[in-house]
Amino acid sequence: MTKYGPRRLIATTVILLILAAALAGCASQGMKPITELSHKQKAIILGDVWSAQYDQYIAMQDRANLTEDQKAVMRIQRKALMEMKPLLNTYATYADTGAIPPADIEAHLFRLLDELTRLAAEK
Image (cartoon, rainbow, N blue to C red; front, side, top):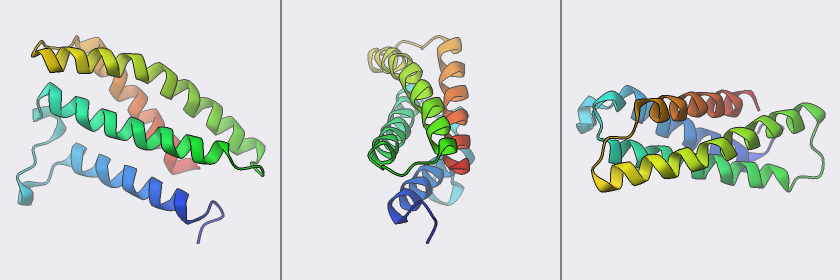
């Protein structure tokens, strides 16, 4: 068991598994690499990862004995989550209407996603 407890380990594992499947693709199950997914499929994956990261943030926030390093990581995580949410909503709106989301929004979302997954690995 890690010093962060089993819930955190499970949440991080789930997030990393989702990302591994999405980014690498799974030929045996017919999944495409993320670059070949539709915008709607990408929006769903991004939304799922955002929700998992948000849930993890809330669970950590409720802990009373956080170290200063954990608090610093949570501040960065909160900033990334808050920045990502309106971009994700905009991206999903484009995808839901069949329009092509702007490339800069997609690139920014994936940069934030990379930051969140890096933070999840460091916690």
